[in-house]
Amino acid sequence: MKVEQKLKIAFIVLIIILISLVSFGGIFVQDTKFVKNIMPNYNLGMDLTGSRLVRLKVSDEVITTYYDKDGKETEEEGKDTTKKEEPVNPKESLTKENYLKSKEIINKRLENLNVSDYKIRLDEGTGDIYLELPENNNTDLNAQYSAIKGNFTVKDDETGEILLTNSNIKNSYCAYNTTTEGTSVYLIIEFNEEGTEILKNITNTYVKTVDDEGKEQTKEVTFAIDDNTLIDTYFDEEISSGSLQLTVGASITSSTDLAEHIQSATQTATLLKFGAHPITYSIEENHYVISNITLKSMLVPIIVLLVIVILALVFMIIRYRKNGFLAAISFVGFVATYLLILKFTAVVITLEGITRYHSSYHIKLYIYTILITFIKTSGVAISSRFF
Image (cartoon, rainbow, N blue to C red; front, side):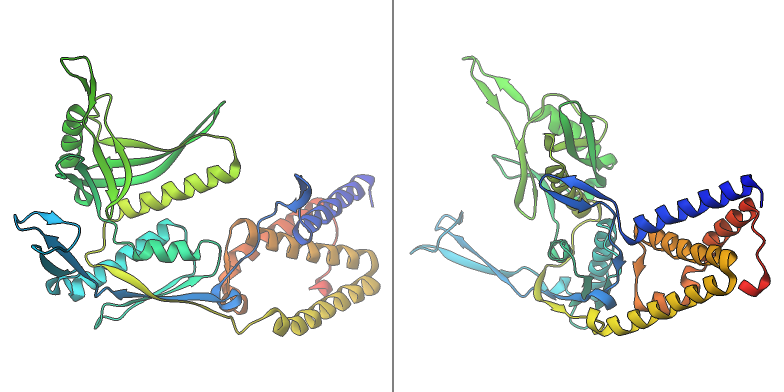
């Protein structure tokens, strides 16, 4: 064998060894006092890790409002007060059409929050929605943001007049900008044609002014979702573009804080982007379901499979020596590369996906093409008896 071919083979073997070390071991870096693996974890499906079952029930809550003798709303019940009780879900809103619309909104919210491998089912009779969510650090938040009604309002601080609602929003998303001082995170709200004109009027009306005595006065508006205030503000200049930028966090230097601010802005943007539920839901059930497939149950099959593979590779090396070794190292490289692709593409690994070969056919075909290219480049003669 020529020296050039030997160098090519040695180079390819070295590359395969490096890929295998990264794939099976990882890449470890110093993080304060500890060492951590910066490689992503496998994205396991609910049938392997367990899941969270959440039931969203059509709320039967009743809101009680008190009025004084002059007919004005008051916070507490008194001697001369009258009360009015209204259900949060009027009877006329409890329709199949609204139930289906809520299901669609939840679907869009979960997709926008990058929740994978979830299941959703609607009871068309009662309107209750059943969710099966993958168990992770964001499961509780995802369940919560599925149930939130999401009524968006911009209203006058003094009169309470509602100026803008969900119907005026065209799009909403999270954006961020990095400078030498840090990273700033923004919530971007884009309004439709009607909303753009209203926003223009708001930015010219709710401003800071100076009265005849030289005192500064501000007229403010409140941005809120379901009466939870996002921000009270006034405007320094007219906004005629129809795009409003709200600062969620400014000059952030910590990666942890940045991730939290981006998550918060994305969650709020998700509520605004897909509109409000036509009816109000409450979370009635929220419990974890353990997977039937545990590490203990998988341990014996995994060990048996590894032993078989190792014995097969050892036999190949003993029987065919150098060519057997090259075939064995190629197989290890194939497995290592395949696992790396699963990690970096965040493919959801499920039991069904593992047992169905065709689900990963194109990835395997791609890797086989790479291996064949390596073999051709190295000039190794591979006999049909190896396949």
